[in-house]
Image 1: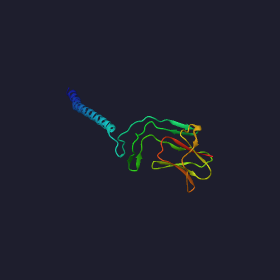
Image 2 (image 1 turned 120 degrees about the vertical axis):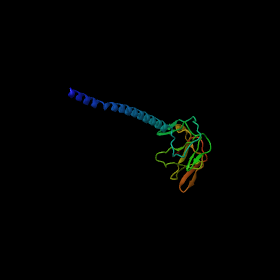
Image 3 (image 1 turned 90 degrees about the vertical axis):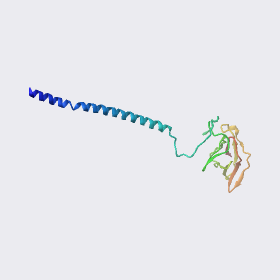
Image 4 (image 1 turned 180 degrees about the horizontal axis):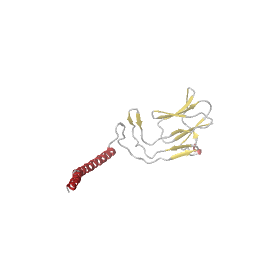
Length: 184
């Protein structure tokens, strides 16, 4: 009988230490659950805050804007010119450092190159546009406000200036679209 008691007490002795372990594991589980909830909450706050943060480092801004109607595409032969549907309102230029943005309706001054003839070059100087080409023969400068209209080409009435072997015309503050080509 005493052997049986010893076995029983040894068994009870083995089971008894497990009761506090179960209580500790419940506390650990509660602590883990609390840490998990805290981590999820902190992650949500950081994720939400990342969408609300403003990008920094840029020094450019457009404080006022307007979407204006208009735009489209003009095509002729292998050339295509696309307009815009949103542009800054007509006003004085917006400037900042070496950059400038002038709003309003864009004038397109473009060259239509004729194969076998000298290339036209278009540059600007302030609000003026200069169309130039090498003086290598007798060519007629033609202009057309709509490149899609082949019958719209007429001889340009702008006075031609010759300097250092280069012919040129100057358009002062041009408005609207105007295409130029050389014709022989």
